[in-house]
Amino acid sequence: MNKKYFMHLLAAMMVAMLSVGFASCSSDNDDNEVPETTTFNVKDLVGTWGLTHAEGWDMWDGQKETFSDDYDPENPTSEDALKMVITNPSGNTFKIVQYEWDEWKKDWVEAFSGEAELDANKLTAYNMTFLSVNATQLVAEVSAGSLGYTKQTYKRMK
Image (tube, rainbow, N blue to C red):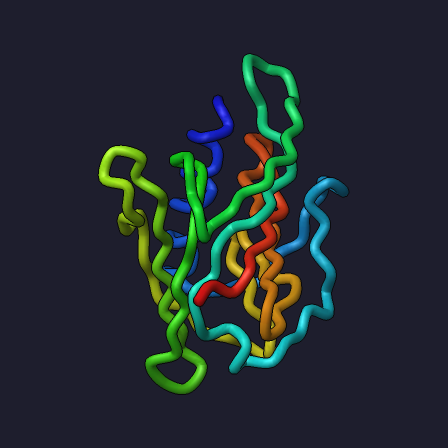
């Protein structure tokens, strides 16, 4: 599995889980451990977020390979560049649309979308947990079980 495929797999899994609903789950793998007390201000979630850093690991030919990559969402240059737009259509319901950079079109194209519910000021899907959100930065962990794990840092885009 290459890094590009892994990032797209994680994005697809995130949106699939968001559209089904949220649940809290524990992990037997310490590499994927998520804090139990994640809280943030709901109004900080809404906006456009661009991926600035991704680090983690994936399995490739039976070997665990680590990665740590930086991105500039204001000047994307690769298909690994991601952004997401989070809106709050009503109450605790959030719509999340994930975009990836299309090198041929030189534009962002929609990759996935889904709706999610915020539960007790904690936003957790089966494979993604928003760890922290403030006015300028969003940090999330995404797990694909034994296939891989990534910690993603996003910045608020204009």
